[in-house]
Image 1 (spheres, protein in one colour):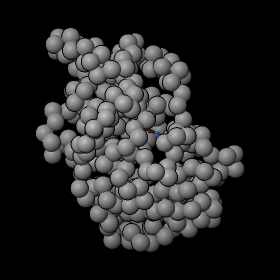
Image 2 (tube, rainbow, N blue to C red):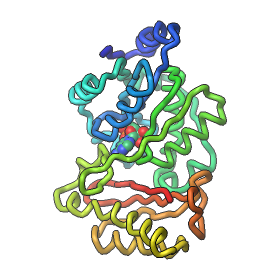
Image 3 (tube, helix red, strand yellow):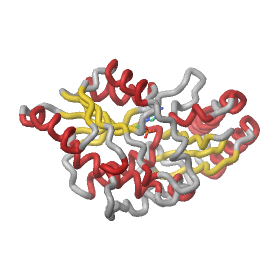
Image 4 (tube, rainbow, N blue to C red):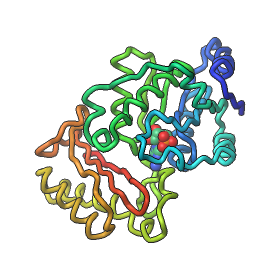
Length: 281
Ligand code: AMP
């Protein structure tokens, strides 16, 4: 595995492979890699000739009161995981390489960046879209892999790619979970033992809503959302940021479940962590 820290370096590493007509798969990450990231890398490994991974804790997607400083940085273990999964090129730029003095350009994906996490994290998706577009321009992959764990991010990146005519295929990979159902996340390590014990109730609440829809025929979104809130309140004691049921294509609130076009998404503050999860109906 080749590790590159500069834009010229990663471009030089990939140029000859591209010239030979090899298919380049790209997995952008913020590091602190776990089995969720590994699933994206494996999918890329299966479908592409060359796998490029980036590790960059992107300052522009963190709010001033958020966890940029304390975000876990585990570069040595990350390199070992990438090596083990057959990554060809690892790109680890510094903040000053990505945002040099005088940097002034940002990407706004309108509407899709406003609801859900956009409401409680103003500027977050502007930072995400900006860094992903920059990484796409630097790596120039044929295909890029994103997790459904961050459903709003995936939907927004798909929109940006289409709107800006980027010749890149965007692949969504299903959420990888701990055996007890908790969605894997780099932020799970913020959880104290008691909160970690309670955290699976978030996914339980989502599964209960799926059962209510599929088995009992409940289609009313406010009833489903209320049921989810009740379960989370009873079983976690966490502070709910949002529980919302929206359309998958537009992220607009739904009154009634539209089969095949429904996203149930939530964010909950629990014992020092802000956890997100979602399911699709
Ligand atoms: P992050 O390092 O958290 O920015 O995530 C990098 C990529 O990994 C994003 O596309 C995430 O959606 C994806 N990802 C993170 N956690 C999971 C998970 N548990 N299952 C699947 N994909 C994930």
